[in-house]
Length: 148
Image 1 (cartoon, rainbow, N blue to C red):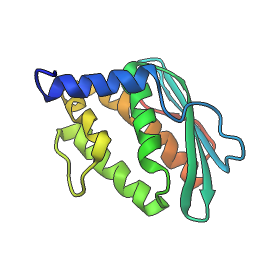
Image 2 (image 1 turned 45 degrees about the vertical axis):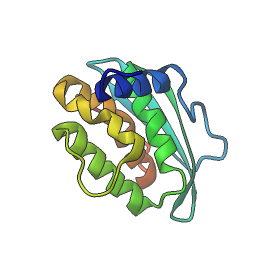
Image 3 (image 1 turned 30 degrees about the vertical axis):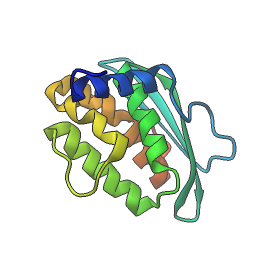
Image 4 (image 1 turned 120 degrees about the horizontal axis):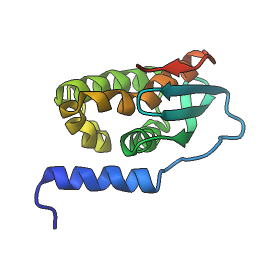
């Protein structure tokens, strides 16, 4: 079994990094944005298929460190079926959690495995890259998002 919660979190992150969920191009996407982290070399493109104000489907593709890939994988799983406002709330809560280690408001589910990222400030941008690309895709901005 796991020695502590950190071991479990590490296993979830490694699992999502090695076998990312919702990975690949999304045919019929009506929103798309690319994110790049030049310091770490992470590159991600987020694709969303909206049904009105609801995320009908979401996928990503790209390369990067384990944190960046796992964050995108868990993010896509958490956001399917959510509305734009619900996605924004999750963005805000996730961002606060990875900066402070504390979750605010609702239970973040599997997203909470990233709470330990706050101990490694250089990795915060890795975890947030896909979220910034998501925000751009939902707003219709097609210009690349860069975190530095």
